[in-house]
Image (cartoon, rainbow, N blue to C red; front, side, top):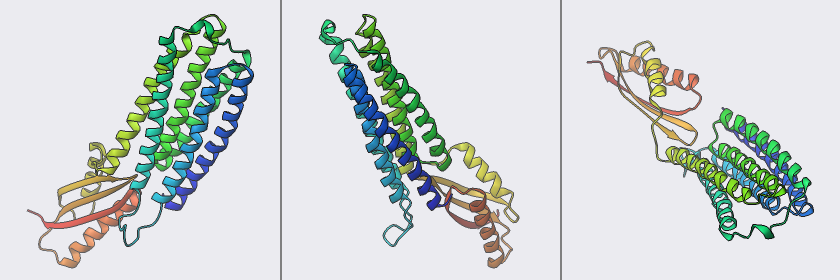
Length: 293
């Protein structure tokens, strides 16, 4: 996928997220104030933090989409991983803050002084769950389409907000029915899910920054494809590495040692072009030719 298209899709999705989160956070804040729900006010603050996440995505994608230059001959794709790590950090801190507040309420034993929220808070929680889950699937779809770690991290931020709203819903419903402790207990469980999502994003981004190889199935697919090319008698070495959302491939092919340099160069050139055409995620291929044993 061309970098321009990559940048346009990521920017469009992020702008949808920014507008959606702004509208939703204002609505939830007003509902929390009018319905005496501290849980809904906290949830509104959580939604507003997603606006910051989406801005980081736009900045990260724009920088990572820049063409190669003299100082960065291999491109800037890894900067999107940096954006994903920043988003994962925000997600982790959000989860931990929710967990801290939940534990504080549980150990306070001061449930009788908690205000009973109104029906508006319950309705706002339901609207928030549906909206944020829809935004999660929307962002996730395009994150997978353009293979964007930063956009996928933003999708999980939407999911964390939906989970937070579920906790608010349970807490509000429990408080309305005489069980105020249900809110912090639900929030504590949600914290685990949010922290797990942040961990998964960290691992994915770090793998792409430290030249982790592609999975065995993809490497076998590449190996089989190269062996099918005319003039290739074998593969002596095959290495792959992740570079942001792109892939680098180093391969040593074995050819007939009696062929001329021009002939073996033509074989290597054909393998190179065929790989790049068939696998758009491959950004660069280095091919070395050895005489077949």
